[in-house]
Every structure is written in structure tokens, then in C-alpha cells.
Image (tube, one colour):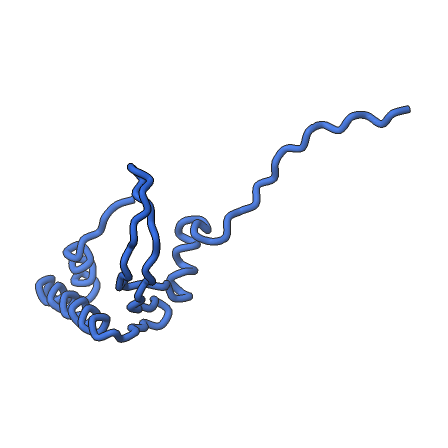
Amino acid sequence: MATTTKREIAERVAQQTGLAQVAVKQIIQMLFDEIVKEVCSGNRLEFRDFGVFEVVVRKPRTGRNPRTGQTVAVPPKTVVTFKMGKVMKEKIARAVGGAGTAPAVESRPQPPTPPPAT
């Protein structure tokens, strides 16, 4: 899996639109800034068919230190979640051969059946 940068996306969009790469990069940055502003305001941000960004507060919980085994109180935490939209979900499922969907049920080989007693 490769990493794609904002610059690479800006180059592609600039080629497709005929706009200057610098202008496209500024527009992309403005879009990101607006997304951050909306999410920081606690707003749910929905892009039809693409997905939804939402602020969620995770409840406090009890965790465990893996080294010592000691229990640790984990405080509440504010996170941003992203849920894929229908079109994105379908395209990703096709692109990766259905990964991310329900796992396929494997059939285990059955032991041989003894012949019937006569």
C-alpha cells in the first residue's frame, strides 16, 4: 500500500482541470481548513456518497498496562470518526476484492466417514 500526498493529488487535479497546481493546492488546503473548523465546532460534516465526519466522546474505561498487567483508568477522550458513504464503500469493496466486507465462511475439511457396518 502506497502513501499519497496532498501535492500528488493537487498535481492530478491540476492536470485534469487545467488549473495551476499552486491554485489547486490552495483550494485543497482551504477545504481541509473548513473541515477542521466545522469538526472543531462540534458539527457533523456530511459529504453525500463520500462519507461523514463526526465528533464522538469516548466514555472513560478501565484499561490494562500490557507490561505490568496493572489496571489503569483511561479518561474520556474526544475523537473524530469517519464513516464511509455508500458509493465509497462499494468502490473500495470492488477495488480490493471485497475486503472490509463480512468475512467469508471457510469450510473445514470433514474427517472421512467410516464405511457402514454390514
